[in-house]
Amino acid sequence: MDFRFDRQRWQPYLEQVFQQLHAMPEPAWQEYKTTQFLQQQLASLGYQTITFADCTGVVGVLGSGNCTVALRADMDALCHRTDKGDRLIHSCGHDAHMSMVLTAAAALRPILPRLNCRLKIIFQPAEETGQGARRLVEKGLLDDVNFLFGVHLRPVQELAAGRAAPAIQNGAACLLQGLVKGQSAHGARPHLGINVIEVAAMLVQLINGLRWDPRQPASVKMTSLQAGQAAGNIIPDLADFTLDVRAQTNRHLEQLVQAVEQMSAGLAGIYGAAIKLTQQAVTPAALVNEQAMAIIARAITDTLGEPNLAPPVQTPGAEDFHYYTWLRPAVKATMLGLGCRLTPGLHHPDMVFERQYLPDGAAILARAVCYAAAG
Picture 1: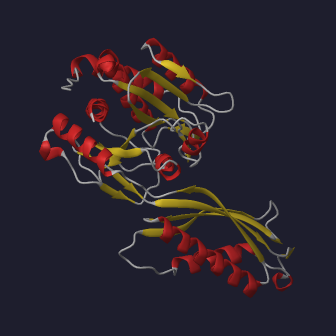
Picture 2 (picture 1 turned 180 degrees about the horizontal axis):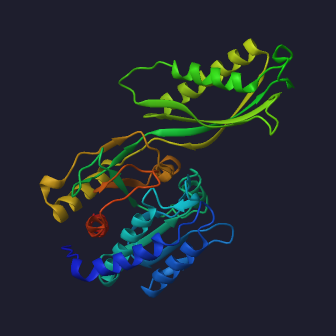
C-alpha cells in the first residue's frame, strides 16, 4: 500500500520522546524508568503491552493477520569515566533508536487494520552486554515473527548524513575475562616473586604481534587491567584483565580466541604463572536476509530518493540484534543504517549527531512494515 509519513505531525512527537529518553540513561538490565515510559507510550497508542517479571524491556502488539512484522530498538546506556566522574550516557544512540521505532509505531497505528499484519514493537534491554536479544528469544517473542527490522545510527566514517543503508554487516565479538596468578614478594626481592603486571604487559606485546589475513578485519586488544595493592613496595600476585576480541566472521573470531588461549598458556609456562581465560559476551556476526534487505532498500528509496540509498555498511562493531537470526534462522531480518553526521564516534562520551535525520529513520521503518505486510 502507499504510505505517507506526515513529517510535520510526527517530528515534534519524535523530538519530545527523544528528549525524555535522552534525559533518563540507564545501564543494562536496569532500564526501569525507560521501560515504564515506553510502556505508557505504547499503551496510549492502543498497543497491548508485555513486560517481564525477571528483566526490563517491553513489547507492544497491535493488529492481526497472516504476517507478523517486528521493529526492534535497544534501550541501555553506557557508563563513561570522565573528568566529571562516572556518567551514564546514551553514547551508542539507543535513545535515538527508541525514538524512531516508537514514532514509527505511532504513525502505523491508524493504518494497521488495512495491512492484514500483526505488528510487534520490541524494546530490548541489555544490548551492550550481548545478552538482551538472547533473553527475549528464550521468552518466545520471536517464534511468530516473519520479518524483523532494526535500526542503528552510523558514524561519519561509515555513512554520510542524509544517506541510509539497507543492512549493517556487523562483525562478531567477545570479551575474554582473564585472571593472572603469580607470586607475591617484597619489592626489594623481585627474584623471589612472579610479577603479574610483567606477565600482563608481555601478553599485550604478544597480542600486538598477532597476524592474520589483512583482508579479514579483526582486532584483539586489552581494555582493562587491575593489579597491585595500596603498598607500592609489594610485588603483586593477582591481576584481572579484559580482552576485547573482534572479527568479521564467526569462524575468524573462534580462531582468534584459540590463538589467544594458546599464547596465554605458553606465556604462563615461561613465567611460572597461571592465566585463566573465561569467554563472555559473545556476539555473532550479522546474518542478513536478502528479502528483508530488499524491503528496507525500497523503503529508503521511497523516503530519501535513490541517490541516498547507500550500499550495506560493513563495520567491525558488534550488535546483539544478530542473535535473533542466529537463534531463529527462519526470521527474515536486517538493520537499517542511518547517516546523521554522528561524531566523533559511537561509544564516545562526547558523541553527537544531527537529530533532523531521525524522522527519516522512522519513516523508512514504517514503510518497511507496510511493504513486508504486503508480501
